Amino acid sequence: MNAPPPPKASSSHDDSTHLDHYPPASVKVIAETVGIENLSDEVARALAPDVEYRLREVIQDACKFMRHSKRAQLSTEDVNSSLRLRNVESLYGFPAGAGPIAFAEVPGQPGLFYQEQTEIELKDVLASKLPRPPVAVNVVPHWLAVEGVQPLIPENPAPLPTHSLRPDIHDLFRAPVVPAHVGGGAA
Image (cartoon, rainbow, N blue to C red; front, side, top):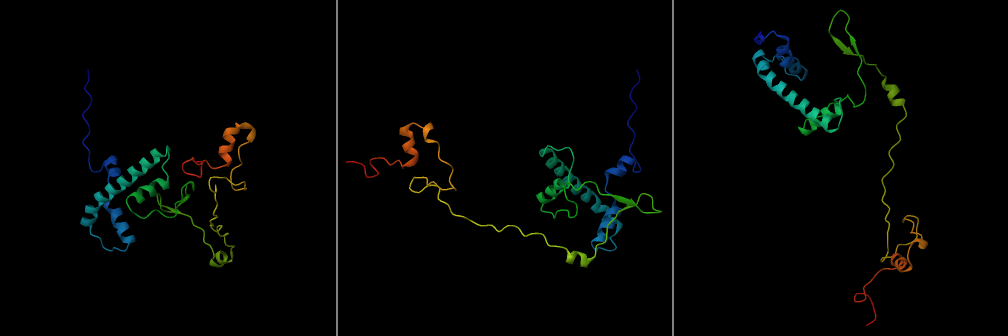
């Protein structure tokens, strides 16, 4: 019988380890987008594991939201719920159910993509018709019963047909029931 081959020693250049870790170069790029210039390589290497840990936490919680919703596809609402759970600002520009986003490849740069966006004129936006405002909220007071008697008005439910009730029960639905010792009963 042949024994199974020993597991390969993982190297730092292996594809699986390359995909397992958040690259420090990405930390530097994100730092530049938020205004932190000249982030040292040492700081980027120190921040990368923490960024990876936080991303894994958010995605794991988003997957929990997905499973609890009995869905098989992760949505942006799941990620937003996970971020809200951590008191982090939600993602903007990626509504749930919007479908896939079309990307175009940059000519002469294989593997580099961008999202095509259409330019809109401000004058067109200003000239467009505004959406209708929502209906104002109002409160209408209504008495369901007055002193135990239900008035016959349209807001109240229709009374039960009298022919379906016994005569002694029918009286209970039209007049208040007051015990003799509380109301003005015969003494």
